[in-house]
Length: 305
Image (cartoon, rainbow, N blue to C red; front, side):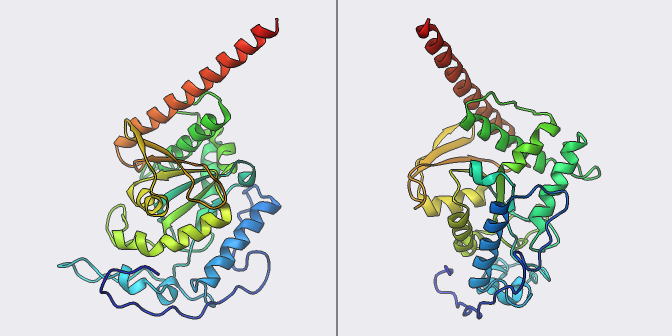
């Protein structure tokens, strides 16, 4: 595991494996669409976490993760804060049709109860909200993260399908979008911070091998990166040459073994005001591509006559 230079490193603990069923310790939400390939990929990620020593006889991450002491050391002048209790590595929120599209989103970290299935439950809850026309996840806190993240995924799918995109899609239209995509986290635990719990730089570095391992299993053809920590993690892995327009960074990388051309789309975190400008730039890019495709199709039809 990577560590801060000169810092002591705790030795990894023995790896443990889950014992029964395709996803031991995990119950897929009943409302969640599922497929055999989806479950197979989730099982492979779970096995990967176990092989890395992050799943050891149901022990929490703070007792299993070899980088825990490094990650949770407070900045100079700040009081020590213990890591959250009872957390486990999160399985990615994997839509049933993801294997057909291979579009994945990387977020900063989860804000949840720390269970393995937290991301999958968040996926089911988001689809439930969208089905009832709600763009906000919590009526009291008015969190629009899930809606905005899904809107960005919808624009990327439209771009790849050469179809028009919408800046503010109707919530119900985002249900199949989530079925076609995956979401995983750059940092597995809830980071040391108040407010939005933004992870510290060392957390992203120490968690990077676990992100890379999940990507190797999921093998995305396109990656959406929301916020600085996910972008920096992928930059360390791929050294992309970004093209930037209105805060939207785009690139293509050949650094992943499974694909010579993985598309990268990096935007600010949806909670940031600058996300709107970058999202609009992505929608414009998708619509320009759709118009070019429509014009080419019209030209081909005219040539046939």
